[in-house]
Length: 382
Image 1 (cartoon, rainbow, N blue to C red):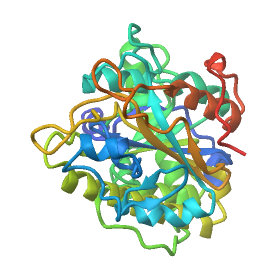
Image 2: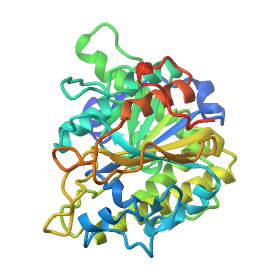
Image 3: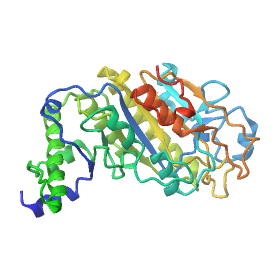
């Protein structure tokens, strides 16, 4: 391949950093036994309408048009209920495989989409600015080789020179593009060529692993939605089942910035989320992988408690997120929302620091030193 042709291909293959994949890793069909799938709910998901305080009259007083009707809510426990558009997750809840984390976030929430997302993805404090994602410090200690695969264009928590991750639209598209890349010995003498040749070598190595393991892929035998989100989750499931050597994946579901017409917009998104996650769980169970995977949602912030004049909600603080998997201890974690005890901005306070969740994953799932040990850990992983 000519250098100019390689640069054209490389431009279509977002590569954050990849170490060479060994031939042994390419041959074996064993994926890591402790995988995390991160699901970014972009825009700021309203957790109050996901896990609903359906017995609290204050909820209906503050949300006269956007509240989930009491008679439609699906009871969970502790006077909380699930949004009916997420009914696909009820079998997993009844099996004790979903933990709902209530009031998760951070103090003095920054209500800028970009800044708050940076805080979530770098695990920084409000007054601290980092350029590397929190996984850059964790995954290199967990395993060598390929650390993560991102099925969208934003590296997010994988950013950093030590986190070896690739971005792709799908395994099929990646393979069609990377097939144009020939292997090359990295040039260690010429600084101008060192990076280019290293990227070409790394792309070839990643493509070689996917080509070897996905050439005759094991089927999932589970239907997935034809939506972009459904297809991306299906791609993640295929890569896990067929032994791709990655410890973490990231997918995104966008559209949660519901300033207007929230009921229709969020209901549609929550249904896509629930159906996609249910299909993914069923695929993992059929393949005997459900005990090896946890799924974690995150979003830049929640929504304000009181609805606005556009029948939507504005940027707020504490929200609710999902952790699910075969080794997850299901239940409601964190305090139920106290709607008569809002902060000075009329928002729910964040009483569960999101870094406590990251520390739990780091310590109890990946068995690594916990940088946030002072926050404690959540009892959500068996």
